[in-house]
Length: 168
Image (tube, rainbow, N blue to C red; front, side):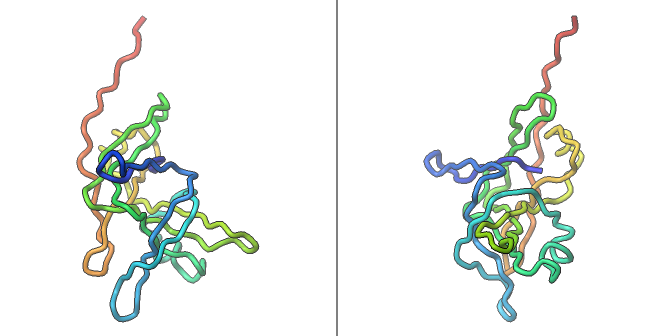
C-alpha cells in the first residue's frame, strides 16, 4: 500500500502527501440518468486502505451509510512505499493524467472529522518486488471517462539495483 504520493508537474505546483495527513477531495457521485458527476470539495484524513474488489459490495454498501467515493483534486505524478529493510522511500511514477481514489467514511457520531481509505488493487509480482513489500496491493490509479472510473495500471517499474552489503 502506498505511504506517500506527489501531485503537480511543475516544481511550484508539486505537493507531497503522506498517510495521516488531511487531504482535499472531489466527490464522485453516480446520478440516476447522467452517470458520474464531480461535486464540491471535501476533506478527510488518510487512514488506511480499501480494496477495489470490495468497493461496491462492502465499502459503498448500505452497511456503511454516508461513505462516499472521492478522488484527489490534482493528477498524481508519483507514489512511494517505504522499504521494509532500509526504511528508505521507494518512488515509482504514476500514469499520466490519473488520480487516486479514496473511500471517505461518514463522520463518527459526535465527531466532525472524516477518515479516508485509499482504494487499492492487487499488485503485479514485479511491483511487489520493486517496492520490496509483503503486502500485495498498490493504489488504484485511474480517470473518469465516459462517466465511468477507468483504472490505469502503473507503468512498468524499472529494475532496482540493490547494493550488496559487506561480505566480511
